Image 1 (cartoon, protein in one colour):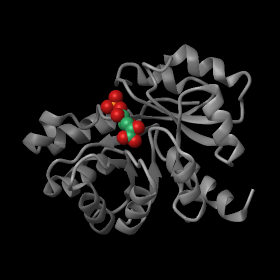
Image 2 (cartoon, rainbow, N blue to C red):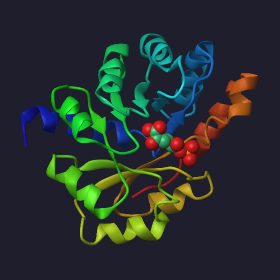
Image 3 (cartoon, helix red, strand yellow):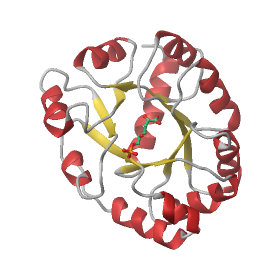
Image 4 (spheres, rainbow, N blue to C red):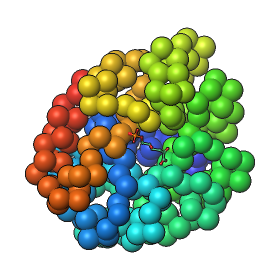
Amino acid sequence: MSEQMLARQTEIERVLRLAPVVAVVVVQNVEDAVPLARALVAGGIPAVEITLRTPVALDAIRAIASEVEGVEVGAGTVLNARDFHAAAKAGARFAVSPGHSPALLDAADDSDLPYLPGASTASEAMSLAERGYRWQKFFPAVPAGGIEFVKALAAPLPAIGFCTTGGITAQAAAQWLALPNVIAVGGSWLTPANLVADGNWPAIAALAREAAVLARR
Ligand SMILES: O=C(O)C(=O)C[C@H](O)[C@H](O)COP(=O)(O)O
């Protein structure tokens, strides 16, 4: 493995180990970005993935990266090389995809930005491992097979660690985190649309506090 790949893997592992949960966020209004990220950090959830699903997502990343202390802001829903480069340019500290593609992996190889590509089958996880990715997103975690499926992957693929995301609830998170091959879980449950719309940052900080104390292996 190249030195650069090793450094990127070490960094994504560090980010994923900061807290048991990565907050997955859809930002509709850019002015929400900073207070929302501050609430998550205050609650003990520093890894914040802003999905590139809204027109303001890159501006939200830029604002959080420059104004929020103690945050590790990343870009989610990175679907192609253009998204990847735009995320890096906006100040994202990591990039996440629901899956992966050859072009996206090539773009990541040419960059210093830590990257968490997605897999949802043994074959996809093996292909990513072949390209040097020990840390992967397992998406969509619940519909793609759930806890039993990911647990079963640990036997033949013990070296691959997953951040499982997609359909995970506050109630189920602890069960996912108990798996030997789950390093963290991702979820949007920390930032419900109604609380964000109301600017209810204390309620979001409270959800983050509950997530931050979840036990993991
Ligand atoms: O945007 C990406 O990069 C994704 O892969 C999808 C998100 O991580 C999930 O949509 C979050 O899932 P929920 O917690 O069920 O809302």
